[in-house]
Length: 154
Image (cartoon, rainbow, N blue to C red; front, side, top):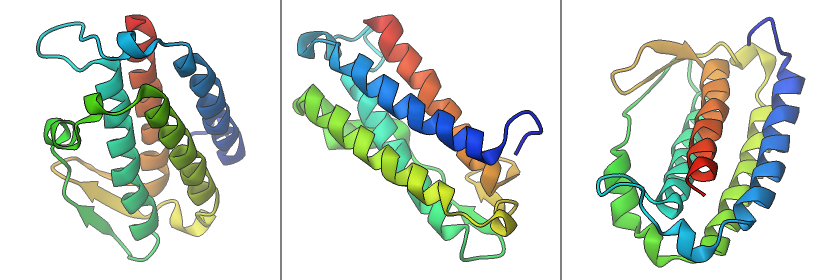
């Protein structure tokens, strides 16, 4: 955890991000959620699907890293996950609700990580070894990055 922000403040910011983003996401029209900015890019609904996939993968990391002295997991093929789950065939409002509920649960999970386990070394895919606390911080930064993509697209 950085010296600039406490774990409690990080969790408060995470929860606030979920609540404020959910309100803004509801303002994105269904039709606009399906519009791709480029032929090879994701539409907002696919970005939302990617955020759900990221939640699922990070959920595993948050839980598994608490049970072992060092976590090593494969990364995941993001494009395959998005394509195989056909997010564009879902209702935008359903994905917003699912994403919001899942992330409130992850905030609960992250809040329960004992301080003694936040420094558990984690290696994901070919990436560097980082701590469990770093993964949590990075996860929320990743959410914010992709939410900005959706909001900038709208």
